Amino acid sequence: GAGVSQSPSNKVTEKGKDVELRCDPISGHTALYWYRQSLGQGLEFLIYFQGNSAPDKSGLPSDRFSAERTGGSVSTLTIQRTQQEDSAVYLCASSFDRVAKNIQYFGAGTRLSVL
Amino acid sequence: SQQGEEDPQALSIQEGENATMNCSYKTSINNLQWYRQNSGRGLVHLILIRSNEREKHSGRLRVTLDTSKKSSSLLITASRAADTASYFCATVSGGYQKVTFGIGTKLQVIP
Figure 1 (cartoon, chains in turn green, cyan):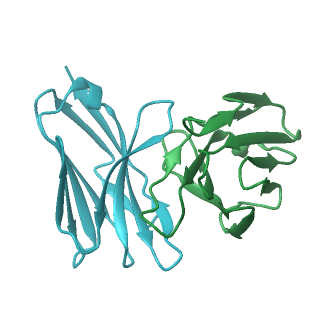
Figure 2 (cartoon, rainbow over the protein chains, first blue to last red):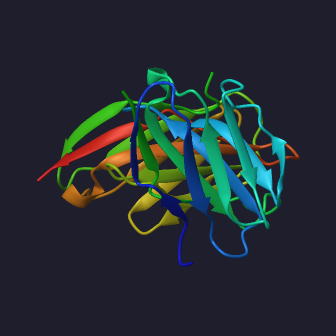
């Protein structure tokens, strides 16, 4: 596609439910990143994919968070047993590769609200 | 803690004035980037400066980098109301090219 696409754009869920957030990166981009942004805050790194593997998942805040990427393209971030503190905007970015300048292209994000 | 820390955290200026935002970081870098985020949107890349560069221009943007002080500044000249947004610096470091974002500066340009 023309840009990074994330879905859904908004998600409201009840505490304790599982949610799946999807990211469709720019075609041909091998690197994919997930970030979390709380209201009025900076970006918190969650996980990085190179192809289908995740060499850096150091930012995942707990074992309730997991992510996968298939076919070197679409990625899914899953949050199990959601808590109210999980409420944030989840941003996905992709870049051509990590070796060059590493300029990242962002999606518009998924706004998650846990009631 | 964040690798990049922007200063000030919030800035309000009149249209036509210049806006200066600063970013400090702690470790050595390969390059430093500035991004812009409009309310409710993703980040958009503005400009990249390599570690061996001291200054770079792009339109009304001027970025400086002082690796001895581990700091960078972003200057927006002749600001416009449409420049109202949050601005983030991002450092790229290590052989792994890890990208770390700061907490951002929220700029408001008053028409």
